[in-house]
Image 1 (cartoon, rainbow, N blue to C red):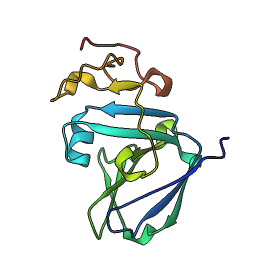
Image 2 (cartoon, rainbow, N blue to C red):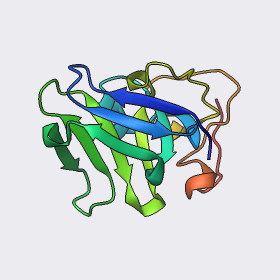
Image 3 (spheres, helix red, strand yellow):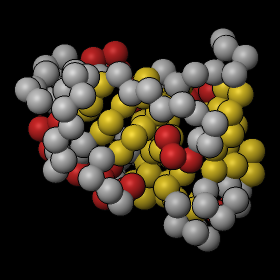
Image 4 (cartoon, rainbow, N blue to C red):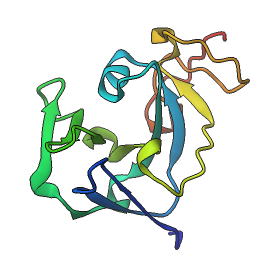
Amino acid sequence: MSDVIRKAGCLCGGVELVLTGEPFVMTYCHCESCRRWIGGPVHAGCLYPAKNVRIAKGEALFTVFDRRGKGQNLRTFCKTCGSPIFNDHPGIEMIDIPAVSIPDLVFAPRLHSHYTERVLSIRDGLPKYKDFDPAVGGTDETVPE
């Protein structure tokens, strides 16, 4: 495990996460759910193994939306400021942290996920996957830029 320790949190500072190591993957996600969660045309996400994410403070400020009602896609917000905190993917044991909430991270995505749902085309030469990154259960099917 890497010795890198980063902090992430919400706009008001009430929630703080401690992230150990580097993200498993940094991605641009174009799915409608992420776009609505983040409030923009694309989500810059950092998937961390769940074991590398620790809640340091503010858990009482969490409000959780279980998008599918099955405990598989748990979007967490801060009750005070409304900031997206993380998206828990228990099925793949990953937690998606918005890159913008990690102040000292140099965001270096290596792919686009759910590119068929895009509302903003990005021509950057990165692979554009139909669904998730194949390393976390995606189909490995790409789509043209």
